[in-house]
Image 1 (cartoon, rainbow, N blue to C red):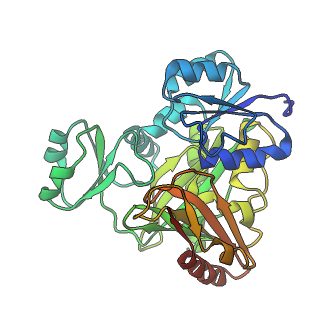
Image 2: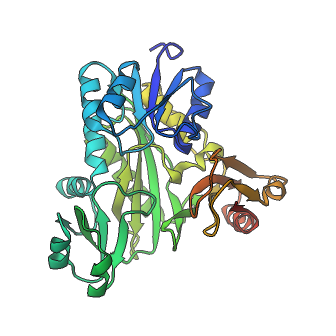
Length: 376
């Protein structure tokens, strides 16, 4: 493949698309973006920008028809257009049938069950009436489609909570008592080569239910690490997926794992790889869809990633308080996403803090997190 002449398109121009482009620039491949927002983070970095919905069949098909390779930074795209593009010879990665499987959490859970991959027990529901009939409390309700960053997920603790239950196709999932959440990012190219990153550990914002702090390597036993790596590789092999896959796990008291869910793209839990690993997740995504040899995933040094979330009391033009102070510090790397408006809990950027000693990196990162605030 001539990677300088290959036209590579991305459905979605958010921060994941932006950071993908920043990695792909090193190879000189023209990158083209489709996104509904003309001011999206990737709009001013790509070789060409097309404004339009990635949920509209004609828009996606017309955009993809001009590409040699097409990939995504978001699952919520028109898969029927992708199937047709694939039939017409465009290389679509991850493959459309995999995107279709993963973006429906009910189908995704059934995949785990059918392939003996450990996951929480679940029931599928088509309506609120079914939720009321099947719910045993406490239980987790997840919308089958459209949820992201903690949205579309809620815990129903008692019958009174049914008043706020989602009245859409959803799944009811056993509420798991876990000790921590971890994830593995794994990549596969067309040749079948597979590389995975060391497991990372996450901490979630309890109010917004999204990751605000993670570190790698995770503080887990060698046996749990081996299990996480094995499950992630098993999943991507069974799917025969080309691209990057993030697999999120719950760690139980005995160190065993169950899969929570997965995402077929670059992921928030892999941002630290830009400074901590020999090959970032974004370059690995590029390499995998271009069918290049995959890069080393070994850790150069331990690190922590802090999500910069918009302050819950502020909406408007972003102001990053404290940035000037933290960038004076050794081992601190700031990544701002170029978003023109901050909103409560919106991801506005991230900071990586590295140190040869993981505990020191964690301590430094907690101080950094206290120092920076995104306001308007």
